[in-house]
Image (cartoon, rainbow, N blue to C red; front, side, top):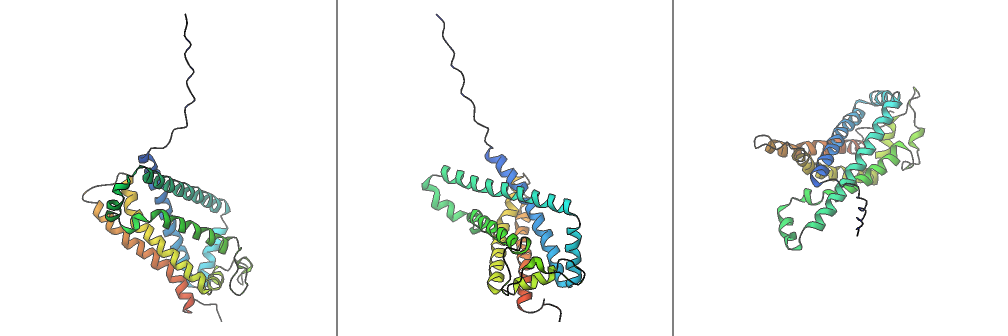
Length: 239
């Protein structure tokens, strides 16, 4: 008498472990942090006047292959970062017993408890920011389409775009709130991403954790300085 051996059921696709997910999330977070700093430094050139910021923007526009490669890469990194963050949050909620909920909340910082929510708000801000300045879907308060603004040399007038955009008080307010939430996100994320990558040493870790907050504050101040300068007429259209 022969017995048939049942065929093995098809195996599901392997799921990333928690450690691997955190490492990938840390790497994508590091890439996004580098972009945030570089983007801020580039935008702060608006304080140097129209010629400097418009020349910088034209330099980027003259390299479309590089520009779109960076854009697509950043979009991919951002999606992976958000997706892993949401998944890890859901996994943690599912695995955590209710009896420990109160104790964990007390021990965790405000920034660490709200990482998923600040991340989602930043995602919404990025979508609005692209609609505002990159695609021209959102016009200024006085009806100006940013894509129609060009300087005397025929270049995209990023300086005028900045002034028209931030003259809208609700937009400047929303922009500043988004930057503050970005700072809250980074104040915890900078330290945790190094720990997720295994950079954890009694000598260096305290310095990394302490350095995350000042760096986050500098980013917030740098980004918020632009709408504030426009509202105070420090940055204004040439007479």
